Length: 77
View 1: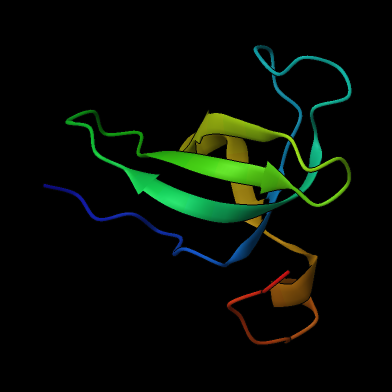
View 2 (view 1 turned 90 degrees about the vertical axis):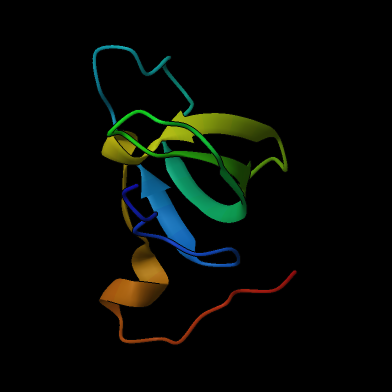
């Protein structure tokens, strides 16, 4: 079984895609790693902007702003 690429507490960015509704992109924090047998892992994430939680696939994510700046994680708050 393939492992998740991101961990709980890590800051990530939800990127725009064909299936991504407008306004849903931006910075999120991983809150849960979801089990599945598909090759595209799933995560529960919480928006840093509005606090809403969503389920997204790994292909919709990339390392967040904090990772790009060399900041450590997990992110709390």
